[in-house]
Length: 451
Ligand SMILES: [Zn+2]
Image 1 (cartoon, rainbow, N blue to C red):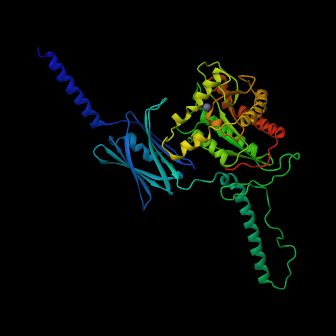
Image 2 (cartoon, rainbow, N blue to C red; image 1 turned 90 degrees about the vertical axis):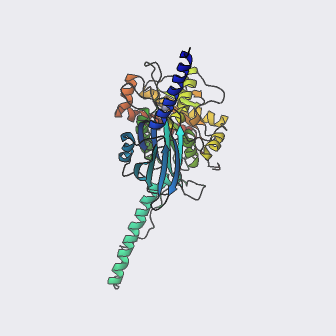
Image 3 (cartoon, rainbow, N blue to C red; image 1 turned 135 degrees about the vertical axis):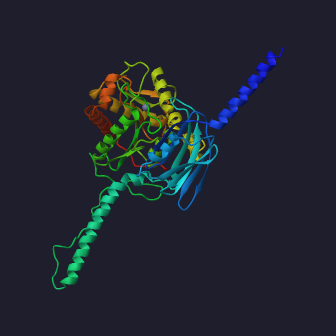
């Protein structure tokens, strides 16, 4: 009667065997990805089992050293070296080596002073376990400064041109002291153009040219292309990704808005990288945006669902089941895109975003109606009115905010339209007109908000 004991013994050795196997082989790499952007560069190592890592900074040259436990050096991991682009703002290069048995050392050579965040993400959606390194600048970029950078550099060039002319003029005087210069002297200082003034943490955009006597200052429109980086958003039947198409539309919309006198557009992302939801709102608030427009092209489980929708925030439940479903789907972006939940500013930012106000929602509904009316002229609408639900990205307490589902990317016909540059241009026209009409009816008042 030893069969039972034998069976138990066999099971025990099987467990031991599995344990040893796990230790010996550890996790396998599924993929490595690098997402470079001016805001930050993210490196993701996706594996079939959870990885643990220790990291430290080293200087001369400045580098981030990461020891990943339970990993053997593999060709998949070596791919990381070739995935770093030469124009990456943060990473100069990556070196990979087997530091000790089962410990792989990654050395990331840095281009600038960096505050790294290293964290793991549990499997979600199509992703398995992810080990993430976010390389962020130690000094965060000033978004308002970035907004007026082009204008400033243009002014600097103008000033330099005057300096050069002046230098030439003085040279002429020195060479020919007896010739009185009359017409050559630049008499005027560099042309003053309306631009926001950057004064510490409290920006005060200056006066813009009057527009119908209503717009008496610079209007800032925050444009928020949804998803990005690790989060592709919805994917159409032929492979068009929501994150790409909404970025294309947002970049065109930015140019159109910047061409309107007295208006400036600010993008929450201008490239393919992920921005956490609260960060999108924070960016808009930092430039004291007058509007926030989040752009999406979502999917429904029924492929025939079609038409554009415009959403505003709701304080008391969603306006329909579909609206609630859509909000839940969009709010899941942080899980898929990957947020470091332990980052110290995240909780504060989230708490702030819960202070939604009735006034904000009222203005958002007005903005939504104008935009919906215009989109209805160039495409089909999913619902003839602005819908409401608890979208996290619409929760700036002081900025009228809407989320536009430009079309259903899951519908083959609408996916084709979204890909079509002509339809994109029509959409951009409609959005611009909707925004302009909102401001014509609701002229912005003087800024009084504190940052
Ligand atoms: Zn979306």
